[in-house]
Amino acid sequence: MKERQKNNIYECFPIVENRIICLLNDDTVLEVDLRKCLEDVPKLETILSNERLLSTLKVDAGGYSVSINEDIIIEKRVLLEHGIVIPIYAQVFRDFAKHSIVNTTEACTMLECTRQNMSHLIKTNVLHPLKNGWRENVFLRGEITSVD
Image (tube, rainbow, N blue to C red):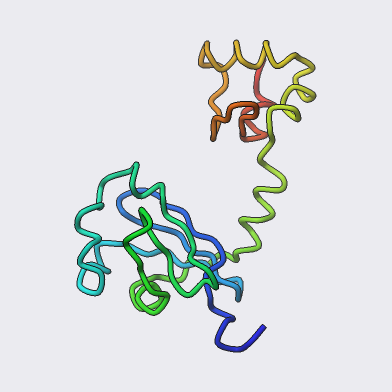
């Protein structure tokens, strides 16, 4: 990896109050308040506080910028300038996902139940998927293991 690419972005996701988390190739984690980026990216004003649009956040090719709703582009330079390094490593997020997130198939195995039973647990608010899918849902392992 070239020196200039070491702090490129490889993953990003929105969190609360117009903030995003960016995971960088050098294992750094940045928290960026998008309101602080308004001077550099005026179009951000139109999407702030719109959770649906913020959920379209993605890393652009090469990790030199992120985009929201395909047309609002925030350069890496702006994110680095306004971001705060969080004292946690990006590897921690990968380890967390690997250890703590399970899909429907894994959850069914853990609970020794069918997909139909899983569907019922979701509909009755016993389980709360992190992400709903057509065939698969994603859950926190701790929520699955705490089901009575």
